[in-house]
Image 1: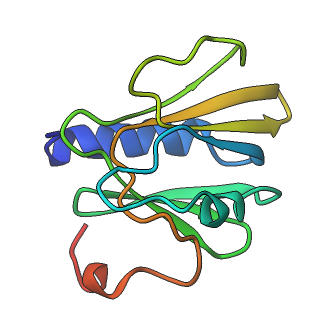
Image 2: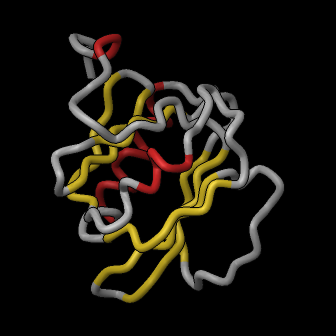
Length: 133
């Protein structure tokens, strides 16, 4: 499981590259993750633009221009990848793939395997309020 320094490194890398990208579409290949994933909930991100990346403990908070956060936990071996070109083949544990658009063209974002919360509504889940960064 990634420790805090690794999670913070990932947060910084995402904060430097993710803001400004708009979610064009969502592909969910596996719904049985840390918490069951409901594809319609993740599709609510479509049309929203990422504006910031935060962190509470080992949870990454991917904030959108709708003032909503996608809360991500990396799990045991989880990763978040941003790359081009978007035609890179999916690997076995690439569970959720977003097609993102921005000034530099389209890229894909892939999450494997530990999305913790699939809802994007509201603020932080109550269990994360008050958790230190």
